[in-house]
Image 1 (cartoon, rainbow, N blue to C red):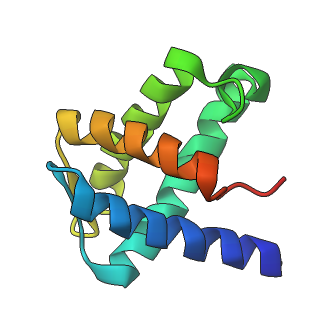
Image 2 (image 1 turned 90 degrees about the vertical axis):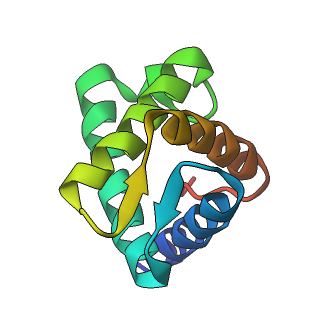
Length: 110
């Protein structure tokens, strides 16, 4: 349970940092980042269930995982309006930057 809490806190911090770096992505403070992190995690889990975890995990993502991450980030703004606002280009750039950051600061439990 503690590991899951740490994962969401790290994910929220990464999302906040990425929102400062990426044009077209805005997060409404740390609370908004936490809510967005939870929604993104849930949407990501649903996508993994639908397509299979081995096809879109961080380690074997490739272009499919990159695009799925961008779609998940983009769709999350409609689930929690006000917490996150993102354009299509912002979602693509955020997916790229989060992928790079995630390779140094893992936000997924192993």
